[in-house]
Image (cartoon, rainbow, N blue to C red; front, side, top):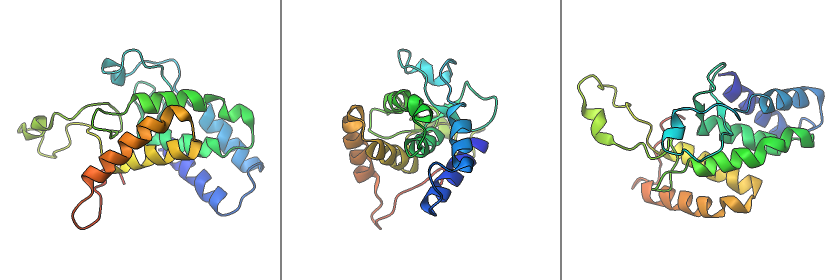
Length: 180
C-alpha cells in the first residue's frame, strides 16, 4: 500500500536522522496529507454516524474504506513534520481515530465494535477472518499515536486502550497481532 509504505518510509528516514525540513520528507508529508479522507462516508459510519471523516485508506481510490491502522501511522508521521500546513488535518485524524475505538477499549482496522465472533463459524468463513474485531497491534498503534500527539481529547482513549492491552496480554507476555 502506498499510504502504509510511505508512512513507514517517513518514520525510518526521520529515525535515521534525515532533516525534517528536507525536500524528500516534505514531499512525502504533503503527499500523505493530501490523501486524508475528509468528505466520503464509508461503511464504518454505520456504527459511528455522527463521526466526522478524517482517516487514510490503505490503497488508492478506496476512500470508502479508510483504516485506523494506516491513519495512526500517517498521523504519527505528520505530527513530526516541519511544515504547519501538513499538520492541519491532525485534529480531525485524532477525532476520527478516537471515535473509532470499540467499547472494549481496542481498535479494529476498518470498523468499530465488529466483534460478532460467531460469524467466523459460518462454513464459507474457513479463514476465520470474516470480521474486523479490535486487535492488539492496531490498538497499540493508536495508543502510541495518541500519546505522541498529546491531544487531551485522546487521554480517556489512551486509558481505555491500555486497559484493553492489559486484558489481552498472553500468559507468556506476548500479544497477538493480526496485521503485523
